[in-house]
Length: 254
Length: 254
DNA sequence: TTGTGTGAAAGTCTTCACAGCT
DNA sequence: AGCTGTGAAGACTTTCACACAA
Image 1 (tube, rainbow over the protein chains, first blue to last red):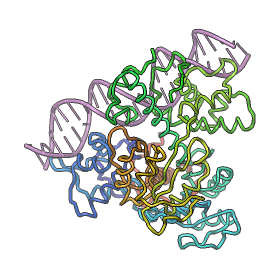
Image 2: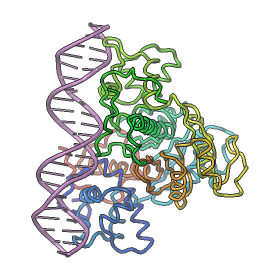
Image 3: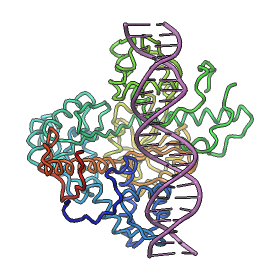
Image 4: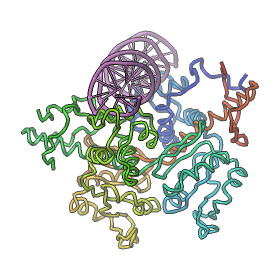
């Protein structure tokens, strides 16, 4: 069945692990850079370094896509770029709308890498009537009233929410009702959506808080180490969250 | 620091799972909202809904912090806010620098939630001499030449990189050399740092690509379902966009 | 000889389900 | 009676280490 391309290796029991999917864009970026430098092939080790992961993980990840490498040689850069792009659905063009054109929304609209790989900003939408018509990133901002029409006219299925937290859920509901099934949420709030709709969130303050946690832990360990007479490990505290190393020795206050 | 805080419950064999740490800010936000509405106590189920997780996970998460709930009753909101804040290191103030004051950097500088909970923007830094002195978010932008001095004078240990990809690694190295040990990277590039330095990345295009992957999969399933005579699951929107070609291997609607 | 592809082991995270406090 | 706290089971992810193809 499946139109052509039945070529796929018997592997692939449908379902690439989520952790792998989340790394594919990383590999793709590294591969694209290699491609631009006309590098023909790359080993799992080299590519892994470029992508910031370890090679075993990379090979395992690629094994879910199929056997695209050549033993003793490595991977063909162009071919892999294509395979990963296809797997990620980037061989087609995704129109995207950005709702909420404040500082952040404008920044996103202006973000180049956005429009590049497979995505196209179809419209900028804001609730403020004052904004309507104003050009941002060379594109006129449209009023929220137009939201449903815009989604429908452009066949938009991916929406970016960059509104204040207060309005996010409502915007989300309108987007979903109009046909959007994937949402990237920058508003610092939890969005509730029906089944079948994907939401990913990007939250500055959450990231900072996670960093603060580790930062505090470093400070604590340093102090503990000093107190115990142990010299603070050269800039090598529990940097990596889980570190297979032996969990800090005796921090125990007893 | 490390003010006598030996109060800690006997539990806590040191080491809260990373996955739990990543959710603490979510709980904290939900709790803060409850606190503002003067809600005195909350059950794991209610709080879980507000934070967008399930209650078993939430209880397990809290169990790593200690036994802060009351069986048959729930959790004391104020007390939990305090405990989580302390665990995350938010009872102290973290000076932060933002490097790269373009659209995004300016948006981050203006982001309110930033300055709120425990973080304070200590300086805005940009490499463009033209920017120097210009006020952004009520604060003069400073030139990169000042970077080391600023970090050191303010005891900054957390840096935010919002430069173009090209300059990110170099900025990162200067930040680290100057004493920064936690970095939030918005530049679309992999940063290499020494052990002991934490990096978290926020990458718009990666998030979009992950959404596109799932979006494509939905379209594929929909097409397959239609082909198999099964009605597409509810909201069949994205119809206009649908998958590019077939791909749709064995569907197995069971 | 080199470097992929992958079973198997180890490590993490989530979910279940219920004992035990209030 | 109600809800927390948590062992134990299950699911997912990473890492190991080596057979095997080029």
